[in-house]
Amino acid sequence: MSKLLKTKPQIIMKNGRPDAVIIDLNDYERLLERLEEKEDIEGLQEMRAGGTKFRKFDDFLAEHK
Image (tube, rainbow, N blue to C red):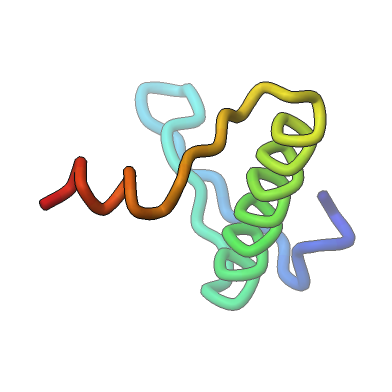
């Protein structure tokens, strides 16, 4: 994770406990991109394992009209 962040996160304390974190906007956007990539990879792995069922496009359209 430290390689992803260019600036050190600032931790906000509340009642002596960590409550929130402030990070650079560019770091935040990079983290979101990484998370989306991870979710895409997991979805692809699920499809390859046979966990996803496919159907005809016409059937999909008929359901969503």
